[in-house]
Image (cartoon, rainbow, N blue to C red; front, side):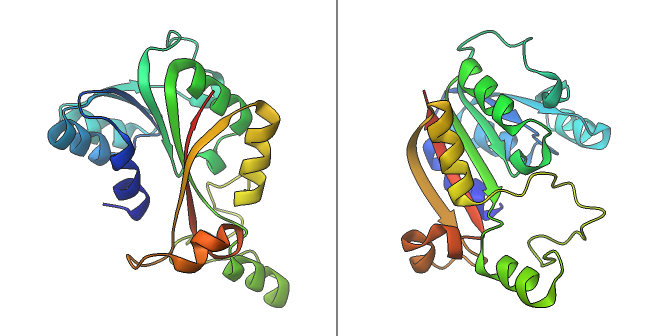
Length: 196
């Protein structure tokens, strides 16, 4: 399981109702269903991922979250997850607002473009960062909004979103000592638990 997902599963209560926005092939929702008895629904636009998730016995809605989530009633989920997809949507602020309308809490993970390696590649080499974690070049990346830890926290403050918890991960499973103290500089992935 991806490092960010192994962290956030601890924040999801057993037996709760979960909406996973951009659920991919459904591996995470399957884990939550089987290990935490979660009643989950996935939202995805990629047909291959939808097919894979349905083959796991999951409920999946084919929908583009940028076009809104009005088909989901207020407070219809306990937790809404947006893992490594915030940077790939056209309107991240609107998606966050909808997440917290639909769910009691939200969990968001995103690559931290303020990480020192990103800064170094851009500052010294003059090129957008490409790494094992962000393997795409500037012209074929799914990332359209490059967000840092500081940017996300500013957006939450501006929108009246309360941050319940923040966690960070690096490139390894070792405890991220530096990224806890200076997350904007040392975290490769930021992980947030949010509410109204």
